[in-house]
Image (tube, rainbow, N blue to C red):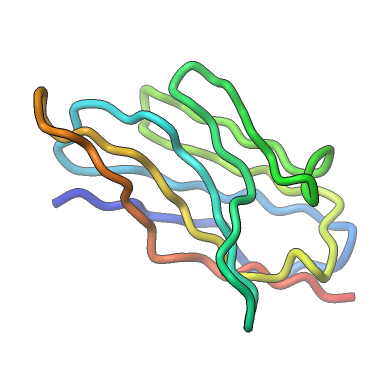
Length: 121
């Protein structure tokens, strides 16, 4: 059974930092892009950042310069280091990854269960 398991969310004051982790587990042949999305109450889910298997990154304008995405391919894990957090960063953060489970079988995107990040003012 393949799954993405997130950790690292919590409550932090504005200006603080948090580090999210997401580990992919199960029988996986390869992982392409991995990323983080977030969804605040009453809003649509939005991309925060993603990273390809060779380390090419992409960030939402709202987090550029404050968040850093990275990954450890040996551990099938993606990280999101969040600094200078603002109350508007409050949301449920979801891990997302394109997983190929077997050679010759098309992959698809998988989602984690989400982790709450709350930034108090």
